[in-house]
Length: 179
Image (cartoon, rainbow, N blue to C red):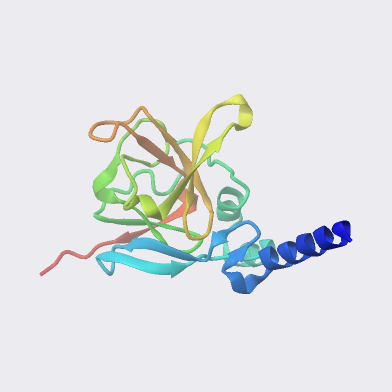
């Protein structure tokens, strides 16, 4: 009797945890996010972007898929956004989330677009990365969990951080000057 009751509790716990109506998916966490929108000029609520591998492959270029979904890295000094210096916003190539402002971009000499901080801490997720026998901090898009790059503690002041991003993980939207 006791084992039957424990089995029933475990079964229902498992079913509830996997139920999509609870607002959770097995790997993504809560589906509603508070993010900062440059267009709106304020924090807004947004849904997580969850797609299958096949859907991502249809939507992204092979280079974008390799970086965003397979945690790849483009060759140093090869990225199309490295020398972009216009006034604007760098967005996730996977879901369009505002990630970095051109105001926070700096020349790090590393060969990848580098920023002192994200547009808002809520727009990125930081995750410990111990791959390749190194201890690093991975930077992910908060909305689609796409791999963007890594953050290091060797950047300029005032933050002392260097968000080292892959160009193929982002797009650039130029901001028009106000009249």
